[in-house]
Image 1 (tube, protein in one colour):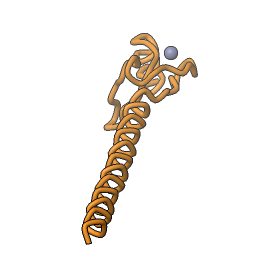
Image 2: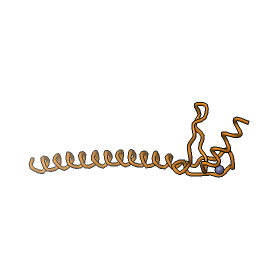
Image 3: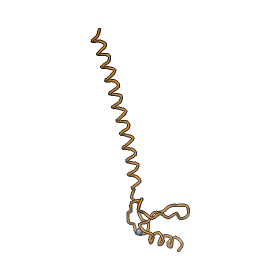
Image 4: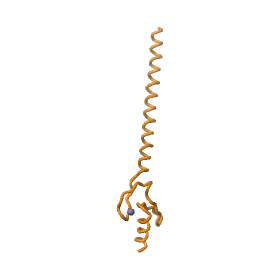
Length: 86
Ligand SMILES: [Zn+2]
């Protein structure tokens, strides 16, 4: 009878351990997802003027006609605006 009680307690313990492990795995998935989200923040964008690829966070952004464009430098942004107005 005592053995049965220990066995039951062990089963409950294993059940909780397994459940906790799976919950941790789930959290890790969430963490990797958020890391990927940060990675996409370092997305490369192409300068429409000189066709150079620049990390989005280092790019010069310019909103023209309600649309945001990204450039490698302010010079390219100015050149693009000139192209549009020409
Ligand atoms: Zn450029």
